[in-house]
Amino acid sequence: MKRILTLLLLASTIANHAQSQASANGLGLSRFGFALGGDIDMPLGLNGNYLLSTAEGATFSMSDAPFDKGELTMMDCDNGTARLNFAFSNPAAPYTEWQFSLLGITGRIDMVRYEKGEEGSPDFQWMEVNATNKEAAVEAVHIRHKKSEKPLGFHWGVGTNMGVSHSGEVHVTGQFIDSDATDNPATITPFDYTYQQRGSFNQRLFLMGGMTIRFFKKMDFGLEMRKGLGYRASFGGPFHVTYLKRSLGFTLRCRLF
Image 1 (spheres, rainbow, N blue to C red):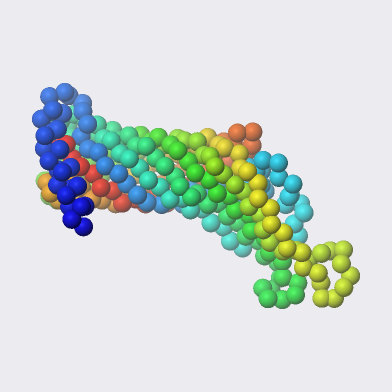
Image 2: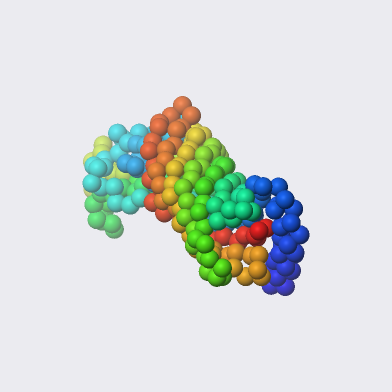
């Protein structure tokens, strides 16, 4: 705790020194900091076919599975996010700024699960397809802050981010009944496949809103939310529209002016 307070006080001291430098140069660095959070960024029409189409050299096909569309029982799309933020504005208009971020998405998971029959019964069949990857991206947001001298502040904006996914895998696991078996009870065949996932170019357009609490005069702690639409264009694979259902992040930033 003492180390954290020391770092915050040091950042506040740097901010006071840098304020005079920024005010002499028109548009300048007005805030810097970081944000940590998580997104739900879902491909529209997410299913096993889409995830398998992003795999390189997949030998498993959804045509081999005994499931109908209605037997897709679960889907999940989670992304952990980390942002390093730099905001620029004119000291004469400090309530409007451009914020640029280096964005890292770690541990993205897109998953679907299919089930047929009653769980625990001899004829129960299931399958999960999940894709995991990471993304490195850049982000730009035009932000408007509500004019206020109070510690509690609000802001909103519109922005975009774009990046490249990498280090991906597609994992298929489950169990099927052997359709050629004649014994009773039925023969259960488990399976487990892992494929490398194609890289992709990703972009999202979004609206953003947030609130901050000021402390130590120059430090802001806040919460931000984004919602929007985007796409993923796999290299040598499918192009798919995505829905940024929810993006939440906790922020810590230092004001320069």
